[in-house]
Image (cartoon, rainbow, N blue to C red; front, side, top):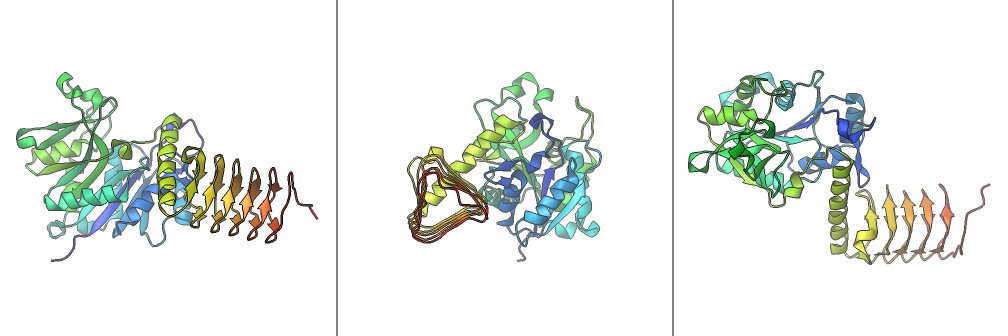
Length: 369
């Protein structure tokens, strides 16, 4: 039996006005990498046949960033949602990047489309893989990722019918009093049977308080037509939290840093105080490295085996040799040799090279030629 093809759509056209920023929301950085790149990194692990990114506000900047820094080998197409009329309209716009003869072809029933928002950088690839697997196992027309939360305010509620079947997602502003009390919420992550998606999207109506085409309404369209709609509850609701303002950005940053630190500690790195240790996703650490509190490692920084960094160090795009020691110092695009001793209070500007075994002493700044 032929393995079904999986395509992915990332909805990243929103302006993100609550960020109060000239930077497009998908490009706000988390742990040294644009938010949207974290999402694409997760999708790349699923090895999709095609990824379509819907862009809008700041489209040129977003497209350039993904072309320059996106995961290697990931096939990405871009579609510009010039007029933003809701998430349903965004997905319908995305489908213009798909081959015309595929969208309504009954022979493509086994092909699926995974839809994710461009502001959910905490989604794990394992969770997305489980969603696709559950969708295919149930032979569903649509499967949504849901979450049980103690405070569902601000989220669309998952409404179920007989036999616990998913019947609809109701936006909070449209919900009846009994629906407002539901604690199962939609996460804006879906897996659809590809051949049914375009016809369902065409049946959406903007007759709601916002005058938009809601993607959530596709669930009611499919369920009302008699198709099977299922759900998968995410284990950790934090995974599906969207980033809409600076507070939520900080929450996502803290969670990503926690994951990064736990991964490095599992690989043999000692962090004396993980809550005060900041390591970007682009940094590389060898086993037996020790990071003391207040250490901030950014960019393409590499730290060799047995080296000690900190306390209170800030290294950007720098190389620290094996068994070296760097304390209370700042370095940018510098190279610290094997067994060297740097600091305290040293400043290494771009191009600085500290030879192996050398000790800089306190308050060191190299002489500029």
